[in-house]
Image 1 (spheres, rainbow, N blue to C red):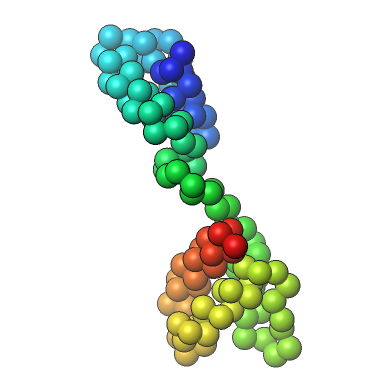
Image 2: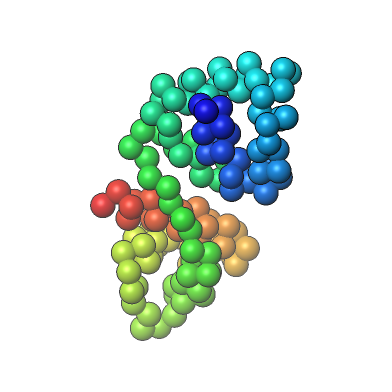
Length: 127
């Protein structure tokens, strides 16, 4: 049961690996020992969630990035009269100004903006 819980948590959102959630794969002699060892470590760690192929650490929350909002906000960021409508936008605006995004060309600015938006989303989640 522990192996199935572990691998279901790990693979259920992974389109490629989800197909391997079957008894032959989970309990086959070539995989079972390795999966059992990993499942025991996962259980001792408190059964953390797996988000986008990454195990969350204790106390860590999953951050979902709304890419549509992120990209729309980037286009509005330096518009005259635009004001943030939520905490993530406000934090991202402050971080973007500190990073000097307004002085960058579009491609590097957009790349920097993605990191800034992620940082703002993480900070807003902690508040």
